[in-house]
Length: 277
Ligand code: PDD
Image (cartoon, rainbow, N blue to C red):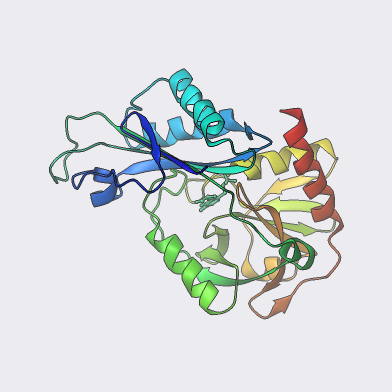
């Protein structure tokens, strides 16, 4: 059963609970995490909660409960939902107060949803997806997983209207990341990805894919990539919690090779992490 949680209680997913003066609703003033549940267990939970704490700190939001309490709510939610496979969306906003740009003197608000996971067709993993390059119009602090996703939404929508599954964003001539994913390329056996500066979200999947590569003796370089480098790569893939590792078949008009040996090896290794945590 899909579930919601707001103001200290689990609720029916369709219950209307957000007050008009909730700052998440009015300003997008908050942070979030998206966590995947496999086999009843939240995958890489500690890393997601570490990032949540970093994001909240960067926006001067004090989390309303302790880490242990948060972990308990997540575990309780999974148990109540009885879902073995689920998507958890968790957000913390600066709270509820009459609209005023200045920080209010109120407690932060935690909400979450636990839902059936979004399904990605197997065909996408076999054939790879089409992507398009778009200008990265976001702000300077993309390392914060903030609720403000307008440029990401606009880029994803623009890509969808051209029949593409992801927009790959470009800032000053260099690839930053996807609209909701990180970007990797393989060239001559080496794995490349954009360095984790303030201009990208340092994905949990990204970090774990990089350690899988280390474990399999695949050299990794965090390096800024030009559009031409990406289009001429041997393999390209995008990563996120919801998609895992998804191969890219096409970038604008450039068609990438059909064989993807390193993507395949990494996909297998990344899936195996579910068994070891
Ligand atoms: N998005 N970059 C951006 C801009 C993202 O929105 C995401 C994930 C990632 C990958 O991060 P991770 O591997 O930690 O999921 C990179 C989530 C899934 C979302 O917004 O729903």
